[in-house]
Image 1: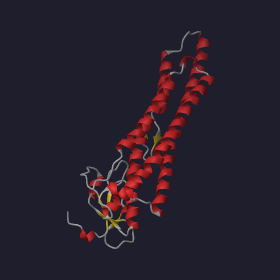
Image 2 (image 1 turned 180 degrees about the horizontal axis):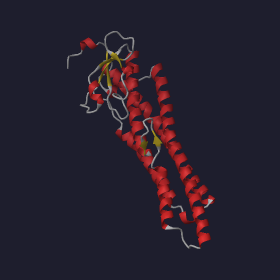
Image 3 (image 1 turned 90 degrees about the horizontal axis):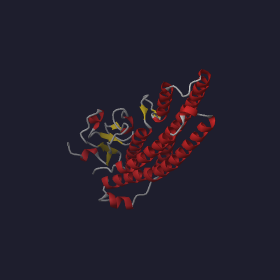
Image 4 (image 1 turned 120 degrees about the vertical axis):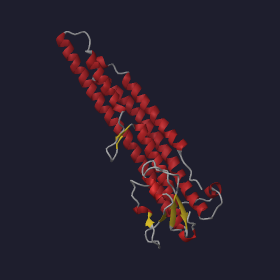
Length: 276
């Protein structure tokens, strides 16, 4: 059985971020760099803050809706895999989160919201830094212009300030590997990864709750390090009998990494599997 994917729902959130980032970019482009003042910068920052508040509200609503949906799918998958229902549609009707999954979903929602909030906080912090820098540069340039008797700001100065403004939204966040991400690209990676992980962990939790302590990692002919784990039988709990690796000990840099699409099929007895 192919596990559900969430490209459409992820794209919904990514478009929301793209729209907000474009609105911030348009706001910054309207600034009169030749006559910046503290009042101008305060007005721009207030507008950016309003855009980001709206974005935070929309992203929180998205998380509240779609993270539990991925968890429901994970539980439904386990129900079908273990023979308690024939189809996902049938299984979804009887899904009920066990205690472990209730706690897990609450944690997943909180974690995802916190990570999305970190993106907007980074954008907010960077925009504030850039607007303050450009304001100071403009005021110094205007002071020099008055002293030198020049009628307009030097074109090189204006170009440099425009470039500085443009950099404000280039980096939404820097990850643990020091990679720099544009906000919408990071959000796409983050939410795709969270949805897949939520579905997978919910499947595992439901399976263990039903007495199934093993799983098989899916196959889709991966070309990265994941390929070495495709079709692997794993333990879903570390104290399960048998000479199988515990899924929690697998290296996250090689399997179930960011953007990884591999899932886990729950099984009760690995001995019943065919060699294939």
